[in-house]
Amino acid sequence: MSQFQRGVYISTYGCQMNVNDSERMYSLLEMLDYHPVPSPEQASLIIINSCSVREKPVHKVHSEVGRYKDLKSKNPALKIGVGGCVAQQEKNKLLGDIPLLDFVFGTDAIDELPGIVSGLEKGEAKLNKTRFSHGQPYQVETLITNPGVSTFVNITKGCDNFCTFCVVPFTRGRERSRKLSELITDIQALVKRGVKEVTLLGQNVNSYRSECGTDFGGLLKAVAEDTDVSRIRYTTSHPKDFNQELVDISQKYREKICDYIHLPVQCGNSEVLERMNRGYTREEYLDKVKMIKQAIPGVALSTDIIVGFPGETEAQFEETLSLIEEVRYDGIYAFKYSPRPFTKAARWEDQLTDAEKSIRLDRVFALQRPLALELAQENLGGTFEVLVEEIDAEGMAFGRNTQNRKTKFPAMGKNPGDFAMVKIEKARPSLLQGLMVEH
Ligand code: 5AD
Ligand code: SF4
Image (cartoon, rainbow, N blue to C red; front, side, top):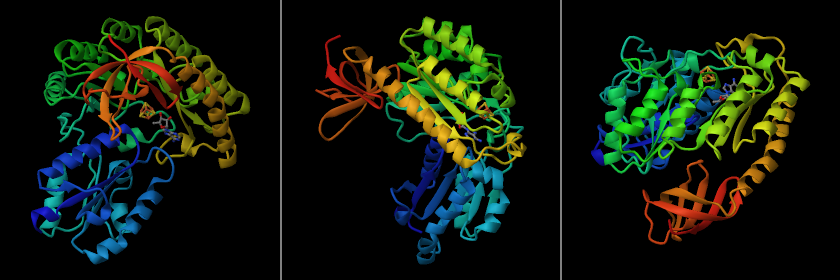
């Protein structure tokens, strides 16, 4: 195969962690002279980076691979692989069930991708690499070829929380943290390449602990003090671990640490929260929200909600609605509960019907829609610092303010990576619009 024929297409499902993993896969494959292509038709290597957190992930993998049948018959050299959480969950079974597949690699095998692919090129047999590498330290330099203005940086992987609905502890394995010194060097290298904003990424960032005992607060402080990055974001926070120390650090380094926190509540009823094994009550959650809002006025909050958890009664669900009203979230990601393999809640008998879950989901959105609009409108007339991420063909700049609200304005000479003060004249939940003003 000649060099220029090497095109890789990665189809990415699921969370930010997967988006980040796909970036890493592209970068690793560049070392083998594989270049990203925009469609599967142009590819000599197709990877499906799967997600099994919700819905019917195995079906999706089957049907996506099925769509590549013609491509494979036209080009027998085409290699197709599945990575991510479905690969980790199904392992060898996928290779048996889907004859078109050439390889399956788990969430700990991403760095082995160049080896796997060059092996296949040399004619090696179908491959399954889905062992967790429990013993090894977690070292993963951010390998993004073109990091842009804003980039994700993994700080932890895996999760030890075992929420009773969640498959992540089974597909991503035990939690491990990256070395503090390695992280600082990594972020500083990204800054040298033009990165202005980093989002520290983990299933549960608050339980970060470096080899020398530094906790997440210490990490935030180190990134703020020891790197030249302009903005720091992080996701996902677990409410049980979000504490006063973190609020104090966010306040102290407010110049850099953004006024936006994703704090998944999942449900507004304490009994359901206990059955979810979340480790906090409704009251404790609301107290933390109060503490955050007091320390960081104007802070934007977003959350994840699961409706129709096994046994959830109408009254318990209504407590989720009242919590949404009380907190006033900028954004809500709401999902119907979906039974996941290996998880405790999937084995419980009091499952709700899909119709019941759909109705509850609609009720969450119906409540949130006007609330989000109201919150967005509160920005009218306000002036915010926006980090420009891109300029479109019409000369409009797009970026986000510290509260993570997407903002659009005439670029007037500004470039990606620049900061601009923007006065807001139009406000929708998904987009603020305005004009630049002097500092
Ligand atoms: N069913 C529905 N939603 C789920 N999530 C995780 N597991 C499930 C499940 N089994 C949601 C949670 C989590 C988000 C990433 O996905 O709200 O915070
Ligand atoms: Fe899943 Fe709970 Fe871990 Fe989040 S904290 S990844 S919901 S087990």
